[in-house]
Structures are given as structure tokens and as C-alpha cells.
Length: 340
Image 1: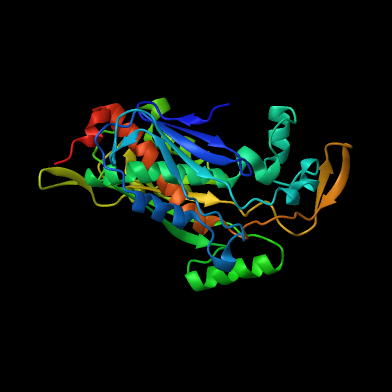
Image 2: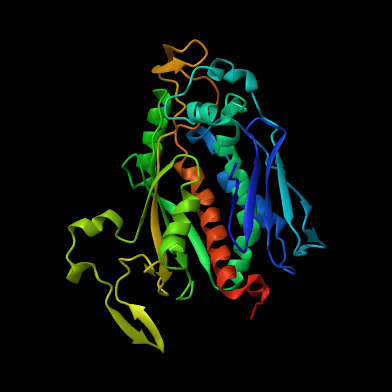
């Protein structure tokens, strides 16, 4: 299994949706950086379910840091964070041991792990595991902020709507109908210097895409104008340049802050497509892998009619992990701990 991401700064995920706990191990993070427990808690709160728009499952996310932090600061050794699973209803998934949820990882996980995977709540493939990403990100983000680098992810649209009141209504309508909806998130990374990234196989777009696509339900990503480039002329699409205060800048940012796989000093901008939650109450055609026969399934359990609003902080955190790793690869891991 490949559950570790990063080169100089790595993050390893562990746990299952209905197991005793989930968590993350951060390795390569420099010593002497203050850990803000209130900030970690606030970030985890952003990911948790919100009223009728989300799943009824209510985990408190009362995390523990088992290693790598002493007297409020990082020690430089691996940081291990665990988050217990307390609000599990595993009996809801009995039928789904053999009946595969359409567009969920049930079938592919069964093929990959020969039927030995923990199928309850999606097991290791569950969105529940993203809480570990958020907790890890909440340790790394403040260090980036102190270096003048900020990562922000916001909702661009849900179910085709850009206004909050309208897309929340679309979510509630889908929920009432036993269905779900998807949407688009936009991420902006500001303050990152020019010259970060590598050509060809370790481009900034490639590294970010690798990480963001690992988040459950993400099915698309585009940088800058993305697919809108197809309808542009070079004279319209090019980011023309100028000098201001001794720095090179661009009049536009159609490339999303990345040229040749390397940052150009403009903000990194990309959009992420999140598909509708695959587990829905509507009856759908599927298969029973025990009897190898066609059947139908109206999924039970507690699931989100939309996960876009909960995924904001997840994409934000994952982006921070990648940006921090790329900066550490260029400047060294101790660079993160050197504040002006």
C-alpha cells in the first residue's frame, strides 16, 4: 500500500472509517515550531458535518499527539496524530459487504485486497480519513503563514449554483430525494516565491494533482484557465509581464502561477471538481460479488448529500502539505523554522 506522500517532508495516513482510530505521521518537519492546539481543533471543526447539509454522523475529533511535540513545540522527530472513531454504526454496512455501491471504491478495494479489506463505512477509502489530512495540515499551515505563504480554498459552485442560498437549497432537495450533488472548489496559494518546482515529472501542477486526486471523490483539477485555454488565442492567453519594485510580475494570471512546472511568483490558482457522494438512498443497479449476480441496492447508513463544503479544508490542507514539501526540497527543511 502507498499511504505516504512527500519527499523532504512526508505524511503517512493510517486507519479505517470504523476502526478504533485514524491518524497521520508527519516526518521531516523541523524542530522548534509552535503547535497551536486551538487552530488544529478549529480546522477539524471546519471539516465536520454541518447541520442538515451533511451526514448525521457526529465525531468529536478529540485528537491526540503521541510524539514529536514537547512543551508546545515540534522536536524534529516524527509527529504522530491519532483521532478516535466513536460514532460508528457498523451494522448499517452488513448488506454492503457483498453488494457493491455504484461509483464507490467497494468493488475496486475488494479486487485490490482480495476481499480482506475493512468494508465498513468504506474502510480505508472513506472520506473519514481526510480528518487526518486536516490535522496534519493544521500543524504545517501556521509555519507557511509565518513565511508569508497563505493557502485558501473556497466554494466556486455546487450543483451548478454559485450563490450560497441557492446551492444549499440544491443540497437539501437532493437529500430529500435520497440523492447527492457535486461541485467545484477553487484554491489560491499566495506569497510563494518564483523558482519552486521541477521540470517534467515533479512539476508543481503534477505534485499538487497527485496529492489532490488522492482525496476521495475528486475527479478533476485545472490550473489557471484550464480547459478554457482551448478557446483562446495566444495573444489572449499569454500572461504579459512587467517589472514593479524590482520584481517581475504579470498583468494576468491565466497560467495559475506556474510556467514550465515552476512557480513564477504569481499566486497558484487551481480548481478541483468533487463528484456527488456515491452512497445514496435511491435504488440503483449493482452486483452481489458473493453470488456473482445482478441485484439492486438502496444504501443504508449516514452519508452526506454533498461533501463539497466539507472538502474545502481538506483540499486546503493537502495543498499546504505539498507546498511545504516542495519548499523544503528547495531550501531545506529547517527553512520553515527560520522566521524573520
